[in-house]
Image (tube, rainbow, N blue to C red; front, side, top):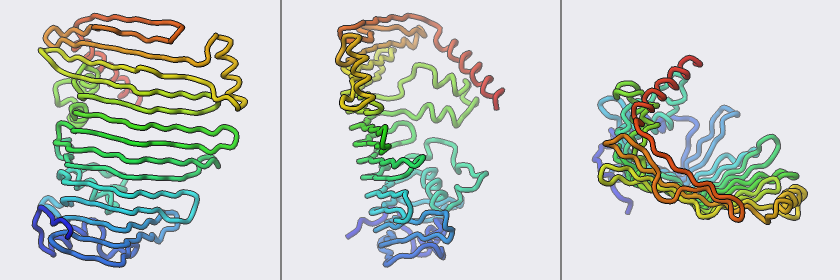
Length: 364
């Protein structure tokens, strides 16, 4: 059977939760079956057909909401929400299909925000998020699986594909992991088709410090912009893999770009590496042949770049310096090596951040 809801709710409490989600007495909604068991509502073959012709409808093969309820503060809460088999209205040039959307164990802020989006309350011009503390937006899991989208931009068909996007275990301070797999975009312009794909984006140990600083504003004792500019440990590791761009006769490929960040003995050490980024020509096309000719004049079949950087921030000395190999290299071309060593980072960034904030305030 279906997993029961961790939070016990009565039928009356669950109905109040559905009403707050605008899933009750909504003339635009219909479904083939609805059930409530062990605190879990399940809708089968749900259809949203708005009366406004300009608003797009959609269908969901199955919508599961565990322990929907309204808190004493009047906010929507639930234990999990899973929607599978989502498809946009078949009419028109824009088409969307999503295999699954899921949210597990959302914190009070995230549950309330999602509730406001589903119910339509978030569409109000003066809407503000119900919680300002980033810790209220915790969750165990959040993501989407198998997204495909077709749209038209300036009379040019555009296709988007996403294999999966998954975020695991955000406790309000650290996001355990973020993974995006198999992203691709294709522009089907008859004269200049564009293809972009990325096999994987992965990040682990992402910190919420910068987002928290933005919520707190000047209350943290330093302008949030200067907080963002300071060398801080924002992640454990990040990686981009399998980049491929094919546009206007130029093909750009990158095997991987990786970065690590670790604190050890009062030092923050950050290392980034890119073994190979290749820029080549797409021969057989007019634009590609021109690019190939330009490369040949310079004595190349392709440009092969590589880079590495390693920086160390000594928190006690307020000093940042490079260590190890730091370079940008073009194979059979040039190699640029760089070093840096300077102190007084925190005071400088604080003044710089305040100056930038003043500039933005004057332009508003």
